[in-house]
Length: 236
Ligand code: DX5
Image: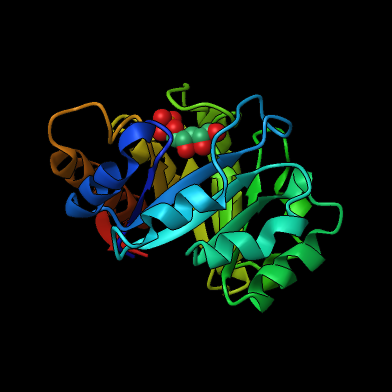
């Protein structure tokens, strides 16, 4: 499985978003994550669908809206109209999560559900059948540049095991503190989609940074899938 690399726009220059999303596409990143924050679900405030729509025509790559907001239902259509093909809601923010995920799919988008670090995998066990993407937060959401929570790797591994056991076609994404030193652990645990912000921005060559992240994830995934039996390396 080729790792999917997603760029968070949180570290971008919000005065030059059109320029920065074009740079992300040139760097070969697969998708852009729009970190939508309402100042209530998380202690930060970012942007609405009109900002996303203003960048839609600048690039052809996929957009995912990560809704770190209380009660996402009323505005679901707006994110799809703005050009997002994946809409991710937080399990903790939805009173009727099954209905919300169904509504996202009814709008023609892929349905994603995110779990904060304190939320167990069991919170989504009964909606995986209507889920296209499971996002496991590896930081407490609200800000970029935070320390990766390696303690989430057991949750990532449990999610990978459950997805594989049920033979489901669900992307398993991680987000928060993902960089060259942390992506191997997340990949080895079973993640196949990696969202990075600080690790992609702030340097001179985003393409090199993206390539290094993808290579690190690929190597770690392959190593985790290969194990030794009777002295011979066997790939699962
Ligand atoms: C958390 C944000 C961040 C962002 C990536 O609320 O959603 O996780 O996407 O931030 P970095 O990669 O800088 O940790």
